[in-house]
Each structure stands twice: as C-alpha cells, then as structure tokens.
Length: 318
Image (tube, rainbow, N blue to C red; front, side):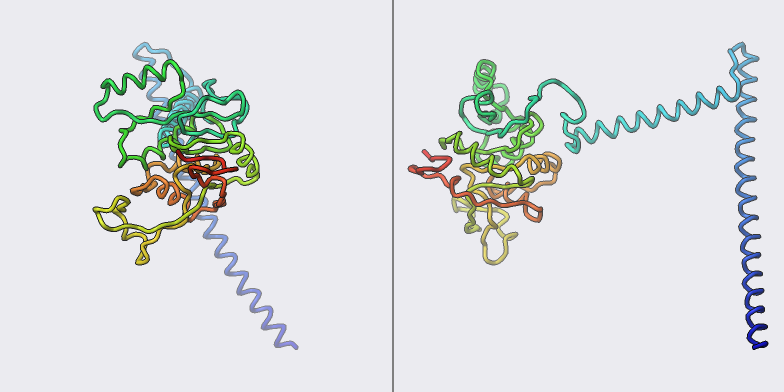
C-alpha cells in the first residue's frame, strides 16, 4: 500500500513539472507576441505624429493621432465596401444573383405568375396569370430588313422576346437556354414553358395541369421519351456527340420538344449556370441533360403528348 502511495505521488509531481514547464513556455510566447504588437503600434503612432508635424510645418491643418486613426479606419472600410460592391456586380453579371433580388426596377409583377410560355400566342397575363411571348433571335445580317420588321412589330404588339442570338436551326439548343435565362430574369412565375410555334395550346388545361404540381419545387414536366442516337453525319437527326451516350446509342429520358414545362427553381438553375451547361444537337435533349444528376421530379404527363388530333390534351400539333 505504501509503495503504491509513493508511486502515485511521484507520478503526480512529474505531471506537475510538465504543466509548469508548458505554462512557462506559453507565458514567454504570449509576452513576445504582446511586446511585438505594442512595438508595431508604437512605430505606427510615431510615424503618424511625425507626419502630422510635417504637415503642420507646411501650413496644413493638423489632426490628433486618434482622429487620424479614425480616418484611416474609415478609408479601410470604404475599400472593403467598394470591393464587396465589385464582387456583387460581377456575381450579378455572371447570373449568380438575379436582378430582381438585387434591385427594384418596377418591371416585375407584384403577384407571382403561374407560367411564362415561349410561343406565338396572344397575351393572357391579365386573364389567366400566364405570359405568352413569341421567342425569336436576330438575323445573321444584323440590322437588315428582317430585324427591322421584327422590331417594328414588337414595338406595336409587345408579344416578342427578341434574343441577342442568331436565328438558325443549328442554334436552337442555345436559343432555348437563352429563353429560360431571359424569362426567369424578367418574370416571377411558378413555371416556364417551351412550346413549338406549330402547336396549339389549350391554356385552361395547361393552367390546371401546372397548378396540380405547385407543391413540387423542382419539376420537369412533359411527354417523356427516349430515342436512338444517330452517329451518321448524313442522318437528319445526327448527334455529333453520339459517343458520349454509350455503346447502346440511346438518349436518356427527356421531354418532347413540342411542349414542356420546368419550375422556377430549374429555370434559375439554368440562369445561374448558363455558361457551363452543355448543349447538344437537339434542344429538347439539351434541356433534359441539364437536369441529369439533380434532385428533379420528372413528370411524364401524357397530356403533353401532342398529335394532330389529341382529344383532352394540352396541345395539338399542326
């Protein structure tokens, strides 16, 4: 028992000596750090006093050291504020911050719309809460008669979305991306809908169908399908990136390009990531590819399957 007590006491003393040594080292380091900070502050104040004396000898008005330190602090805060404003401006230009969240320009509707549709239909914003616009790009010969005609008609009807984009069949995938970017930055809506210009839409049926999915924050809705990927350059539906789709040469599931809808969150995702979203040969395939890997609800809605005689459907193809 005695030997155990002695052993225990020896061990206690051993740890106490280590603790004392550690405390001594810590105190020494703290002393050095504090002394260094005091020395730096002293040097700064000496410099300021000398500078103020020099200005006084030159006839300039002098301020106290404390006042000068306050001015310097204000200048540093101003620099930080300017840097933050520059970061905010850059983020807004890149699409990471939507314009409606960063500034109030009075162009937004007070009440959130149900849907924004890109198609050649009449404006229904007041009656149905649905904005309809015909989406078009620019002529390859900028400013020619075609561009002037579009601008003239748009000034009279205000039913166009004129994108800064060359109107060409091979550019349709880029066009649909620009449409979603423009629409989500212009209108605050629950859904954004792409419709081909040769499709008739039953607005009432469309509104009722979209309203049934308001509880889904990230929804991609349409006539879902897949199809063969064609690797022959002479084929009508040739896909230059055919090799990315595997040996089976089959596309993933995507909504038919005649008409499909995406929720506000997905449109915002496209706007934010516009510069890095890949486009493929076909616009509907491109749109579907943007949601691969995301937590998105794919809704295969048969009412979106258009045909020349589609009774009870949302749309009918011409």
